[in-house]
Image (cartoon, rainbow, N blue to C red; front, side, top):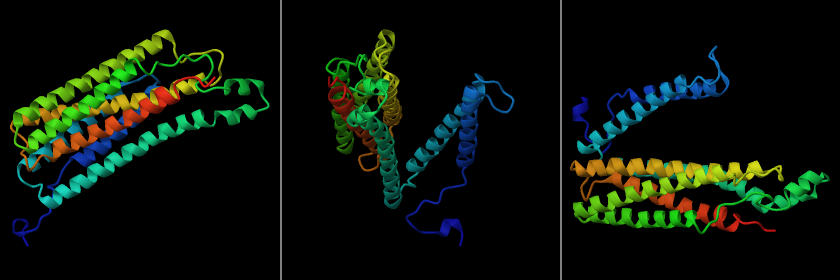
Length: 290
């Protein structure tokens, strides 16, 4: 039976180069990262061009692949059945991101909740190092200054993206554009504040202490958890910016706008993760127990 005679609700994707180019580029980027740090294939360490070549290939693949998906949506290929599959895919992606952050919370909680067990050691240095969490001598970031401002910023951005989504569903394209633009600006504001906070931490050596052998563990867990969240905010901001460009170019309708909906889901996920980060890393376990 000819392809044009097939009648069903599924979208049969045309042959695409992107899985192959993406795999090759990701491999080059990974090998480039090893080369940059350790040297590989006769190339000395601190050789970054292989990594950036792979990164360029990954970014090119992402742009081309998502451009094709947008074209498919505009062509009407995303039937209700296909849309369900896209929603399941986004849900599973966010679930995988949740587990990613669980790993960073896990190590932080392990050190925060069970540091007392290490004080049973027969080694005096170990008992002293783990007597408190955060380690004695480590200056922590005040939770009620910049972190509180960033919390309010993200909470406000959650309301603006919801406003934009509901405006689009009701056919109010102007309101959708305004709400989406405000969300993007709030995302940029969050990233800017966090960059300033990091520079302040490094400049004043908040997480550096010669008195505690595990001071680096606190700094590492803090930067990995909050830093990766900051990266997700940056990705979400780019995601929303693409949606705004599509909206300005006439894309999305009240009935078909899953690209925007997926961006809103991702942004709410970023909001919720930050609330946990703020509550536990900055507030509950961000001050000395003694």
